[in-house]
Amino acid sequence: MSRRIKCPDCKQLCGKGKAPVAVVQRLEVLYRKLLKCGPESPLIKYLPRDIFDAIKRKATIYDMNLLDCLQAGFTHYEYVGLYAADPDCYNTFAKLIDMVLQVDYNFKEEDIHPEIDFGDPEKLGNLDPSGTYVMSTRVRCSRALKGYPFNTGLSEEQYLEIETRIEAALLRLTGDLEGTYVRIKDMSDDEIKSMRREHTLFPEITEVLETAKTGECWPEGRGYFTNEKRNFFAWVNEKDHLRMVAMEKGANLGQIFQTMVNALTQLEENLRFARHERYGYLSSSPFSLGTGIKGSVHMNLPKLGKDKPKLFKAAEQNELLLRGIDCNYETVKSGKFDLSTKQAIGLTEIEILQKMVKSVKGMIKAEKEFVLPKTIKEGCLI
Image (cartoon, rainbow, N blue to C red; front, side, top):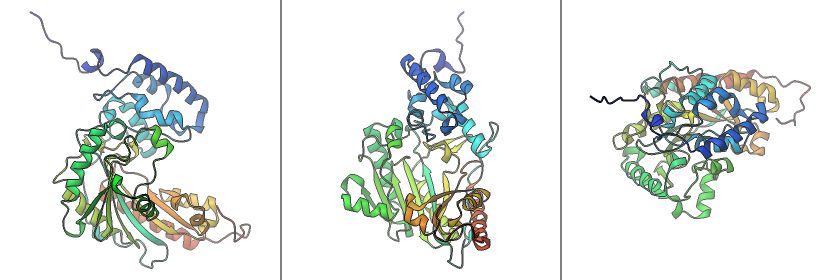
């Protein structure tokens, strides 16, 4: 009597789930070039030879392979350039993902992302009651619809289908979230430029994102939503299927987070988002796994801004990412910076923002206590 044997990884043994030979050969060539870059490439610290060899022949259930995920990193050596092409990448290339999460967030292979906990947003309060240092505050959140590849692997038909589903859900938002949806292809160039200056529309597609193929079929399937109060907006099919931002001038983080919580609660009544049993909510970027939540502030730091080492040290000590607003020389010159939280995985939503409160207050304390050394002239810039 014959017996059927069920393989625990049948897609590998039956031929499916394997990258084409030509792709594997191309990956090998690109990896050797990457090795020659050494530490100049941030990707290499996540991709040692043993991990590369273990995953280079694999492909996902959507037939995406390692080259689909790393094309940007192999082309632009100054960037990590890692973009998951579909949800199954987080199973197929788990060795690489686990390395990223362990190196950057100390999230180990045995760790599991916690369940959702929005806590009590009101208790977060105001980051800067004096209004001296924090100019504006935002909470961002990324989501991917269940059952689709991420942008790197989408067809034009899928882009349009995703847009239709998300548009319908956004237009069902009620109360203070009620608003309007506009397709990018229906907007004029002047409208797009104006909204980008206001930080309410996603920026132009960079060369890195073009290489990663997250900008395919542009502008089809892309859209923008804003509520009537203009303190909540959403981008459809930018780097992720859905990216939402709650934003206000000032520093009332509790109120801003409550807006985001209300939006997520309503949207989940009509949309199913991709979630992993270990990694939490999924995103095309491994650096947004878990909650998908990031908090950020535009801060005025005129004293620290004149001492680059002290400024970066303060940001590092407070676990914040630091950049100039829009990478704009004039904003850096005047001491204005964008600071954002780093970690989205391993913490609950409320824990991330509680940590943000502590971090921003730490930056305010550092600015207040900073004394400009006599060796630094008043006009010096970072």
